[in-house]
Amino acid sequence: MRVLVTGGAGYIGSHTCVALIEAGYTPLVLDNLCNSSPVSLDRVAQISGTRPQFIEGDVRDAALLTGLFESHDIAAVIHFAGLKAVGESVEQPLAYYDNNVSGTVTLLQAMQNAGVNRIIFSSSATVYGDPASVPIREDFPLSATNPYGRSKLMIEEMLGDLHLAHPDWRIARLRYFNPVGAHASGLIGEDPQGIPNNLMPYITQVAIGRRDKLRVFGGDWPTPDGTGVRDYIHVMDLAEGHVAALDYLLKNEGLFTVNLGSGQGYSVLQMLHALGRASHQTLAHEIVARRAGDIAECWADPAAALALLGWQTRRSLDDICADAWRWQQANPMGYAE
Ligand code: NAD
Ligand code: UD1
Image 1 (cartoon, rainbow, N blue to C red):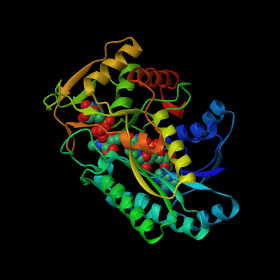
Image 2 (image 1 turned 180 degrees about the horizontal axis):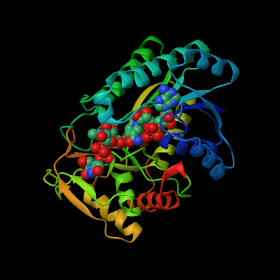
Image 3 (image 1 turned 45 degrees about the vertical axis):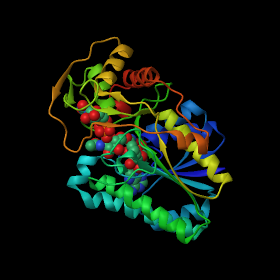
């Protein structure tokens, strides 16, 4: 069964292609490569024995999408394509609304015209803003503090409206917590351009010697060790969550929204020490000022995903660090080598 995977050459998309192939699905990747390398798909082929079909193109290209749906029998769409850097979204809001919101409108219109009505959307825990308590349930209040988060909220609402008007649509809104780690082969992983914004790729670059030390954003948060706490989810657990959502949508009607997280929070220092253990080093750090827009703690109540999809995370913090380190060691400069 063929599944269109927009953004399938990217970090989560490439891992999801592996999980889809392993589950017997046929991914068809559409990606404009604005934040990824086609080498990731060579590596997917190496891991899975199957090369995903790849179309280089943009989700905002209506004519391309029309042709694509006409010429391929597509059962469902997993929609990863979009921009994801919070700071950049503050500086370039229109690029974010264009790529993320307009891109999704164009995709949904093409799906509707083609009679394809099953979609899985990449939302984010960022839609909970600064939550009043943890763990976070799906019925918590939603808010956005930056254009990236607002684009995710807008798309979630758009999908809700679409389902109200057309109840035959089958829609999954998946709210990811913090995706980290890499495939256990070390062949695919996260390959950020420039200085990483996110914690784990920064730490692995310290471990490999590309950065001198981790700057810890705040040591005075109201958390056990004073550093920020997050729900880090192994990217292969996340990928398998998409397969579970797809299996569900093929069998059941409706729209559903679930957290994809582990239900467990770890602090910045716990993550640094765990990667230090995996790489057999003591990793240097310095406590600096808090980063604007950060929150103290954020982790999921993952019960809904278990109840609805039968899915929960299987991989531990040590698995995350071992796999992230294997990827970083084998690919010190990412896919560029
Ligand atoms: P990524 O940048 O690695 O992957 C996104 C892919 O989409 C890239 O390959 C990029 O080239 C492609 N793309 C972007 N705009 C496109 C367009 N207009 N047309 C076609 N392709 C386009 O990011 P990721 O970490 O794999 O994230 C995937 C999705 O999950 C994104 O929507 C992101 O917002 C969401 N998400 C990510 C995280 C995270 O921490 N990684 C957390 C929550 C949600
Ligand atoms: C970031 C995004 C959020 C997105 C989420 C999931 C921001 C402000 N928010 O959140 O929208 O949904 O990723 O991927 O970018 N940290 C350091 N030093 C660093 C980097 C991070 O101390 O160099 C700390 C942060 O303060 C935080 C934790 O590490 O406490 C995790 O940071 P990060 O990986 O950027 O993720 P989030 O802040 O959760």
